[in-house]
Amino acid sequence: MMTATLPHDLQPAWDVAGAQVQARALEIALQKHLFEALIEPQTVETIAKKLALTSSKTQVWLELLWSMDYLEKRDDRCFVIRPMTRRYLLVGAAQSCAQAVLFRLQTLRQFGEQFESLLSNEATAASTSDISPAWAQAAKAQIFEEQRAVTVPALERILSRYKALEFDPNKPLHCLDLGAGAGLISITLLQHFQNATGVAFDFPATADVAKQHIAEAGLSRRLAVQSGNLNEDYPTGQFDLIWCSSVLHFMDRSQQVLQRIAASLAPKGYLLLLHAEHSSDQQQAAKVLPFYTPMMMKGNYLPQTDELSQQLKAVGLRVLQSEWLLDFPMAPVRFYLCQKEA
Image (tube, rainbow, N blue to C red; front, side, top):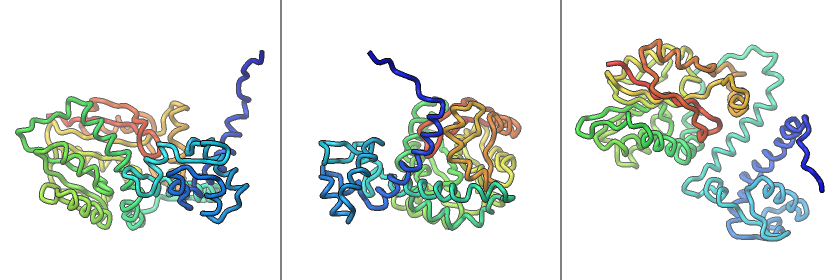
C-alpha cells in the first residue's frame, strides 16, 4: 500500500510559476469568448474550427481550463462550461463579471512587467484628478459588474445581519454612498430603506454614470448625485448612514477624510467602512497583498492592522463591530460598523 506524501517545501514557488500559465489561459478564454461557445457541449474539433485554432493544441488548452474548474469534460473530446462559469463569466449573464475578471488579469499582468522598474523608482500616488477618467470608464464596466454580482449581495447580508441597522420606519433616513462608482450601492440602500433619501458622491464623470443607473432604477427623486474630488471636496448634508468602501486608498490624508465623515454623521448615525488592510496574519496577508502590492508600489495607501480602528476612535466614532469579509471583489476587506456618539 502506498502512503500519501506531503508536498515538497518548494511547492508554493512552483504553484506561483504555474499560476502564470493559468492566468493567461483564462485571459485568452475571455478574449476569444470561449465560454459563450461552450454553453452547450462541444467537441474539441468544433471549438478549434470556430476559433480558427489548431485542434491538438486546443485540446491542451481546454484540458487546462477543465483542471482549473471552469469547464466540465463529458468525454475525452467534449467540453461544456460549469455552473460557476455560466453564472459569472458569460458576457450576457445577469451576474456577469467577465469584463471585470479580464480587466484584473490584464492590469495585474501589466504590473508584473513593471515590477522591477518600480523597485528602483521613487513612485508617488497618481493624483485623484489623473485617475478620474479611468475611474469613470471602470464604473461603466468592471466596477458595475463587481458591484452587481459581489458588493451588493455583501451589503444585503450586512443589512440583514446587524440589528443596529434596523432604523425606525416612521422616521426619515438620509444616506450617503461615498465613492459611489456605478451607483448600485446607493440604489440598494434606498430600496432597502423605503423611508430613505440619499446622496451618491464620486468624481464628476463617474457620478454621471451613477446618475444614469439611479434614473433607470426610478430613484432620481429620492437619490441626489453630488460630485467632486474627495481630497478637496465633501458632499453637503448630514447623514444617518454612510457607506464608504475602498475609498481611502486614493486619499492624500485618510485621517482628514474620516474627520469629515464623522462631522457629517448625525448623532447616533452609522458608518459602514470597508477597506483592505495589511494584516499581521500571514495567511490573511497572502490573500490581500497580491492585489494591493501594485497600488502600494505606486504610492497608494494600505493601512496596517488596527490602524483604521485607531483613526476611527480618534475622530469620535465607536467601533461596534469589526470583521473580515472574504466574499468581496479581489481580496478580503475589513468591515467596520461604527456609530457616532449622541
